[in-house]
Length: 190
Image (cartoon, rainbow, N blue to C red; front, side, top):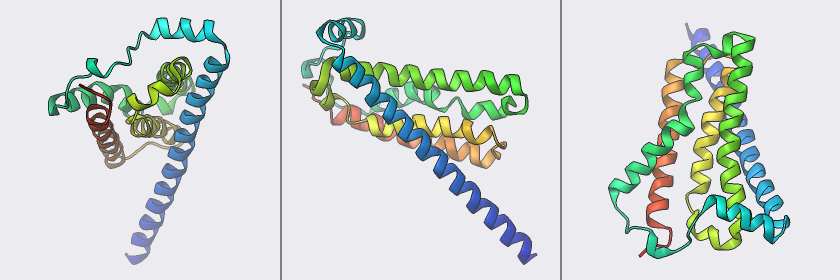
């Protein structure tokens, strides 16, 4: 009985180490993509920056941001949760079991990450340092996005247990609640 407990404990430690390593890879990749896209837009010249700013349409005016409210925090977190947590469900539907489904899931997860990172990176390149005070939540949002991506990357190798899946969604939700609180309280507002 003690051997079975040690084997289970060692397996859990290996799984946790693998997940941390996968998360760090995803988080680093997300930041590298964000900064790379920002650099491309920034060095692309005024014409590209103006075009990107016109598409994004951000108005960096503290008067446009409402005063902090709990309802806004919850609304932001609720909006971002499905965007960042849906890859956890790929294991539930068995996408990791079939090569075609696994390939399609890879494309979907990659596209979700690229679209989110592309918008933020483009905005950083177009607006420059003036945008930074409006993005205090970004490290936590990218942590949540990396958690969702990591869940899929781990599930490509082995199915997550229900407990691991719930833990991943809970971690994503916590990261997004923290991000939403920062986005509500720490950005310039009236």
